[in-house]
Length: 128
Image (cartoon, rainbow, N blue to C red; front, side):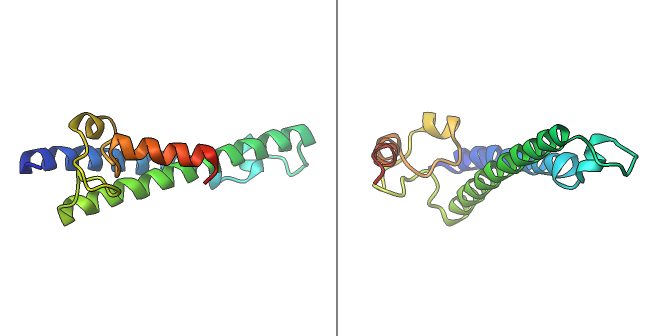
């Protein structure tokens, strides 16, 4: 892969990484760092209704799932940046063939070519 292309993908990955960090910080500030009492805006020390507590717990669980998903994406973006440094970026980790430019444009952290990704998805679907 040309140096110019690598620089373009590195810039895309760094921008995505920054976006993920900002998203995770926002989730942390808005949901994960606050207590149920703080999140509800209640100043009273009296307990809130059980239904409100259930809703708050559900919102916190959703925020945790979003953070978990963002964490996995962060890992994949970091791994792609590592591959750029190692000069292995753009090669399928399964078959060794070049990953198409169109795929890298759509998913700059892709580690598999389309054919190998399809095989992986079929295995997951079959539970293997």
